[in-house]
Image (cartoon, rainbow, N blue to C red):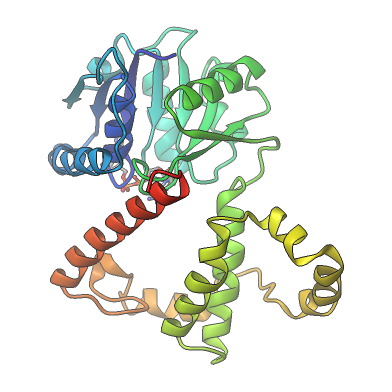
Length: 309
Ligand SMILES: NC(=O)c1ccc[n+]([C@@H]2O[C@H](COP(=O)([O-])OP(=O)(O)OC[C@H]3O[C@@H](n4cnc5c(N)ncnc54)[C@H](O)[C@@H]3O)[C@@H](O)[C@H]2O)c1
C-alpha cells in the first residue's frame, strides 16, 4: 500500500484523483507546471470532496490522507512511493516529465501514467528503470468512476502490475488488467468503436443527435451498467448474435480516418462545451447545470448499482 503519492498534472483528471487517493488514506502532493492550473485544481478538489461525501466514501480508520499543492516538482516527488503522471496526452510532454522525474526519484519508486492509450511500452522507454512503470488509466470523473485499467508494458515487472492492482483494490476501487499493451487499451477502444458508429449514423442522416443520445443512453447504455457486453451475448443468445452479426458486421462503419462532420466542426472552432457549442449549444448557465446534474445522477446510479440505495 502506497503511503505518499505525487500527482503530476492537475487539469481535468488530477483534482478528482487527488481527492479520491486522499480519501483512501494516502498523503498526496499535487504538482502542475502552471500556477493557474493549481488554483483551479484547489477549487475542483474541494468540489470532488463534497461528491465523495455524497457517495458515502469514508476514510479508513487511520483517517484521510493529507493534500498539499506545490509549484515545485522536486518537492512534489520527494518522499513519494508512487508518482502518477497525468499531463497532456502528448508523448513529448510526457517524456520530458519522465526525464525530470527520473533524476529525482529512487530506482524502486513506481511511476504510473494515466495515459488514455499511448502504449506503456513507448512511455517506459523514457525511464531508466522501465520495470517500475505501469499504466493506471482512470476514467473521467476519476472520483466517481470506480474502474481503473492497469497496463504493463513490455518491460514492466509483473510485480509492478500486481502491486498496482492490489493498491487499487485496497482503495475500494476496481482494477481491470489489460493483458496486452494495445493502443487505447480496452475502455477507449470500445468507446471509440461506438463513437465512430454514432458519428457516421448522424453524418449519413440516419438519425438526429438528440435521438441517438436517447437511443444509446436508454437502450444499450442503461442495460450495460447492469449487464456487461460479454454477459449480454449470453443473455441474447450466441446464435442470435451470429445471425445478426453475420450480415450486420459488414455494414458497420469501418472508416480509418475521422469523420468530416467532426473535422468541419473543429475548423469552425466549435469544440463542444469548452467553446460554447459543438454537437449542441451551451450557455454558461447550462454548462454549470449540466455538470451538477450529471455528477448527481452518476452518484445516484452508483449507489444503486452498489446496492446502497
Ligand atoms: N480528460 C479525460 O477524460 C481523461 C480520462 C482518462 C485519462 N486521461 C488522460 O489523463 C492525462 C491528463 O488528461 P487531462 O484531461 O487531465 O489533461 P488536461 O489538459 O486537462 O490537464 C493536463 C495538466 O497538465 C499540466 N501540465 C502540462 N505540462 C506539464 C508538465 N510538464 N508538468 C506538470 N504539469 C504539466 C497542464 O498545466 C494541465 O493542468 C492524459 O494522458 C489523458 O489522456 C484523460
